Length: 421
Image (cartoon, rainbow, N blue to C red):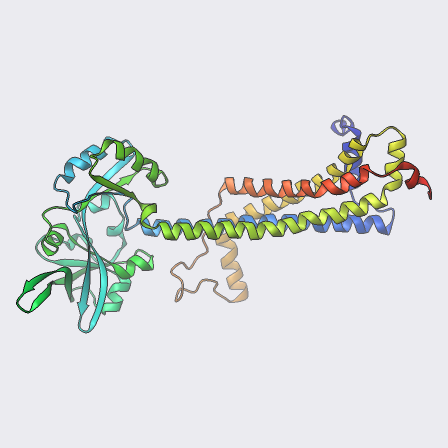
């Protein structure tokens, strides 16, 4: 209470106007509208926090699934071959962020099984080195990644690709290379029979349906390469990959090209970024509608309190002081609504893995059916910078909504306001 006594009188009057009035039905109605505005801001803020957290969760989940089969950084030669890949890997390790390196061969080919034909991205790897840069070995659900042995021509397929071809462990598939052999009959694609030694499931349809792994030596023979295409790198923090690429570009030979994981999927990440921006704008409009309800609340308050304003003016209050009174009232409604919304949004975002299953059991529905979506649980990734931005935007909108009614209150003329009192 002692703190309140030390506040300027504008704050004290503004706080008094904020509290629900019981002296008349009109005061109660004004307070009711104020509560509705506060609730609208709270719900808008909470909805925006939850939606952005879920979108961040989806983005993180898909990104992690991508990086289970992708490396953080790829280093390759313009000629398509890198005979000195061990030296390049050694130079890359001079950067403290690099913690893993493995050679690879990338090529496009066709897989044939009976009358089924599928285009695939073939990746030649060393089974002993690949776990240093990706998690594909741990994603193998049938067979073993270590069965990729030089000269045995084994192959590991994505689960969707294996399903499309109708093959399982031990079945034979024909691999057709794009580079053909010139014969009197024309150009004939080179082909080789491979044995399915494993099936992996990354959880990302694009890779599960188009990616196949073979041994590095088999890939070099199949695609007539004398050495690996390049080196794949793993770093401590994948989010720093663009910065690490810039650092490595200054230390590695100039004839090498570097590409980080975000560049390989730039269209997808750009689409997600645009979607998040649009959702932020749309849901911010909900907050804006609730915030600008404060305009009607304050206008009604100013109309009801004209006699009080006139008395304060005759006692020496300046127009600026009158403005502060109503700005305090509106800002308090916005701050309280934002605080409630932030608390509710954070609570839901942090417990969405409990709330959604409860709602599914209660309503007897499944929001993400396994038959349609790979992700069956609603992910959430709460980011405090987003929470701060949302709260700040809500407070600013609420403050802007107070300007016109407060300015109107400051223009009230005491003589006219008291004429009929």
